[in-house]
Image (tube, rainbow, N blue to C red; front, side, top):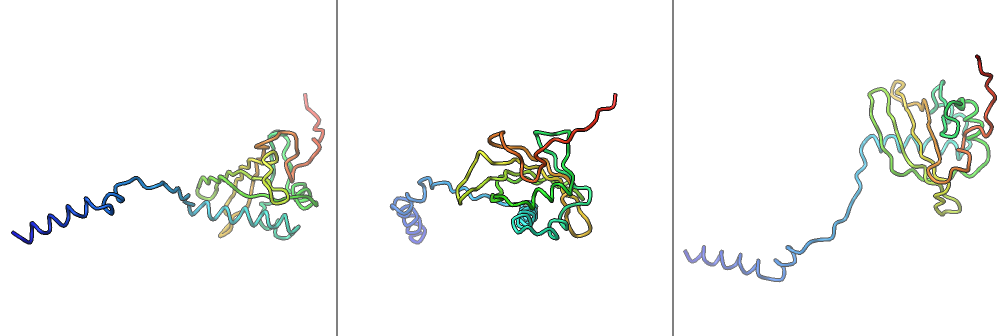
Length: 176
């Protein structure tokens, strides 16, 4: 009986002590973002694509793009930029510094739809006016993934050309 009483008093003393009270106080919430397996896989693929562009590595860029790749932009939704023109524009000298943020991946089996903010940087500083919202459609080719279609549109200012897109709209004759 004495042991039980002593144990009960000891427990009550712990609860009444400052240590017990500190445990009851609300702790500051720290939000740690979790990255899904697919976000990790496609972040690596997107960074590999960006590295190919920054390094002006035509061979690496050729390997990651599907043969029928095309770029579509919000400014010219009915006029796709074909693969060869995308490569030519992407490998041209320019500032291609950015980070990938806010990625989402939709796994559709042998295809994946990946969206993200391509957050622009210039001189090491963020330049939100040049941010691009990108939606990439990837397709599985054996053990690899190939970029099949890229949809891109300014996320900030609307007065600049998307890198890799043709600056001029080609004249397409209408058939009546």
